[in-house]
Length: 332
Ligand code: KG4
Ligand code: ZN
Image (tube, rainbow, N blue to C red; front, side):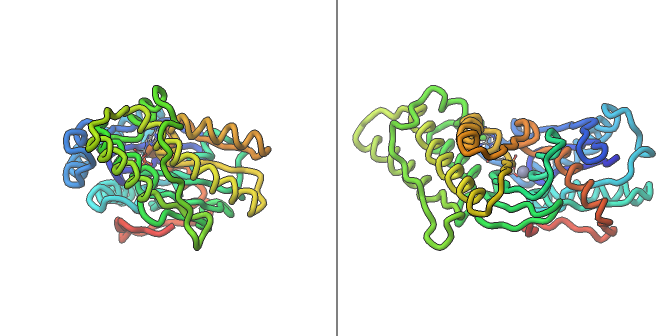
């Protein structure tokens, strides 16, 4: 029975997870409204809000799971990567709970959490498999060799996929958070209206690059403005989104086949994108690849995924001391 805490960015979250895969509660306080008027996450505001909310969120997670701290086997917390001030709130809270109660402490890598979100709703899923992690800070193609054991075979050379969504959304005037807004608006647009580039990285066929695509969108917007042409926001959104999805799908499925796996999972905030999910469903079905998708609520930041990852760390005997610190650039 794991109490998990997540505070690496702008979500204050706590969850109780039983036996690694059964979510008894999943409480998420999102700060989106607070950051919207600044056009992105303001780290100092995020840290302060985490401090205000964290006790309440944890109490609610325990109450909804109908347990008390006495029922908890381990307390797990994201200790990186993320915003250092935001991470420190969760890490300090978890250490305090552990110190006060004697419950063992387990630090979890945020991306390991995202990947482990796939275990929650798929009891049959076990490593090895290939996983695409596409979030606001990461675009990784990962071979999950065993629980908590990862080999990164592709990564982004510049912007993460979610970052590209957020920047393009800002450029076309949709504001923050960009991903869900582009997702929604794209449904009204033509994905083939504007031929945006699909970048390939010469040295590693599994790596990604999204900054050229972002520049192409900005150039397109500028040239329309200079020519006095009207911009169709929905067409730009849909064409940009299609360009991102095409690259993510092509690189991922190429990796699955080249490495000889028959199971593939996706994770991270961008994995909640409806068109991306449809594209992977279609392409995996055509190639007979077993596809695993977490529900959207387990794609974006949450603590249940941290509880799932922590369960396997606990089984391996991982325990952290009270010197556990927040590591903003923690490697997978
Ligand atoms: O995993 P996540 O919640 O936080 C990080 O660890 O970064 O991912 C957040 C990212 C943001 O860039 C957001 O715009 C993107 O995921 N995102 C989406 C969608 N929902 C969230 N991108 C595309 N379509 C969505 N529906
Ligand atoms: Zn995340």
